[in-house]
Image 1 (cartoon, rainbow, N blue to C red):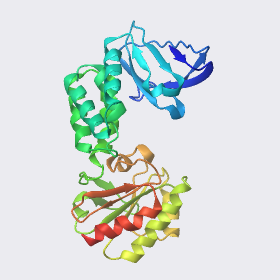
Image 2: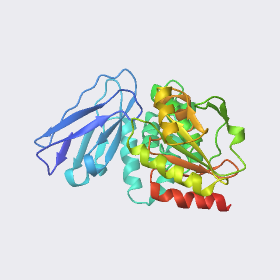
Image 3: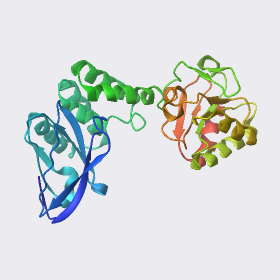
Image 4: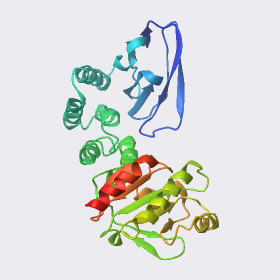
Length: 307
């Protein structure tokens, strides 16, 4: 590639579809760079330019992709060399002329028209892969189209596995069906999570930042009792560690614990995004708010209790 108006710099390349772990560094000298990677099948890669945005590209076996851009507008750089990358560059240029709503419309139209191409996967990853930022139903529809169009793609399979729990627990969705183990015995059943507003809080003993969130939730639990029910979802691996902290903080009987950490059924089923996250459900079991800030918790609870 060649980048104008720059001599030496570096940026990063990674696989947003989890085709490989970590990031590689690409170093620019004299405005030029070369990067090589062995690929056995089509793969979507992302170029990360620090605060200057990112670009998606498609790596295909036996091909070369070429980037040409300006250091002041790296997010608008052109990537050519294959049909898939030519299409992506054309779409980027088209999207630059529209607003956020037009971006989604153009991205979904592209996926519908090219669902068999890895370029459609790249567009999905760039514009539609975060169900919390847009319409979870649209994200689900586009993901289903990719699965139909590319049934043998490991990238698409990885995306489906990773995103479905997030789609199913996005704002506006009803809680999925579940039966989750409680710390001191028994199960928390999804059928019991209606009739009153609920506040779910994720926490772990090893996450110091989750302490403030848990403390804030406990305050709200006392203030709004008996109208609000708080569920404390612990993702520690050691039961005794969890039990000691739960008793010290008098969290009560509604502590979910499965002993399998951040990738266990509790965290996965409830779509955990971080250990400092909470979400509120209304009386019908519909998720009304997801957030990581303590200062917004009060308003979210008041709105749920008022309905």
